[in-house]
Amino acid sequence: MRQIVLDTETTGLEPEQGHRIIEIGCVEMINRRLTGRTFHHYLNPQRDIDPGAQEVHGLSTAFLADKALFAEVADDFLEFVGDAELVIHNAPFDVGFLDAELDRLDRDVPRIQDLCGVLDTLVLAREMHPGQRNSLDALCRRYEVDNSQRELHGALLDARILAEVYLAMTGGQAALSLGSERVTSAVGQPVERRVDRSGLKLVVLRPSAEEQEAHEATLDRIEAAGGDCIWRRLEH
Image (spheres, one colour):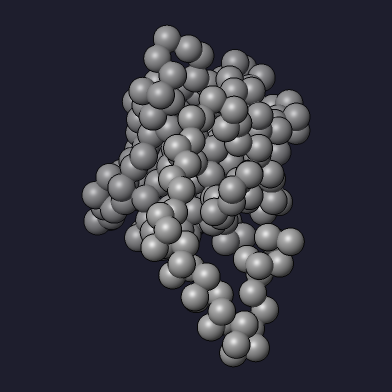
């Protein structure tokens, strides 16, 4: 399963009013593991940035003046996301802007949802945590994901953070363990999560005499073959 966690920054809130994408950040996951592959570009929007938007992401028209146009990176972007499911927080916002940019190319290109599946983590969070705040920052606090570097919004940083939040929301990347889960974070670092089993009521089934006899016979065969019989070492 190939997934692309995606985020954008824009000049404003409404693509219908001519607002443009100024940053795209994507990180790739395959089978719920980050591969290290990313797609990241700052883009020249060829228009002014709303003051409110600039306060959020800190990107200025002067900084973006020498950056690529969306049309110049569109083919690379479409190739990168083409066979993946997109994981996006508040997907209609980003998908709407991406479709608007693709429409401006004035050539035959598919719309995002014709090209990719889309998973909206905001919808998922609202289903899992009804009546609670489900912004990315709120989810970071809920799932103990470090977002201390997020003083301003940035597409690639937010995509990396969202990847970690998404994995935590949907069970992480866990290996079977009796006492804990080993989970790989979005930045590839192992994180150990202790599992509280204090409330579990375990039923202990004792072996019958016939089962115990068969077990001992099996241990005898292991030892006769020169094997190291761990069960008998534990008994002592």
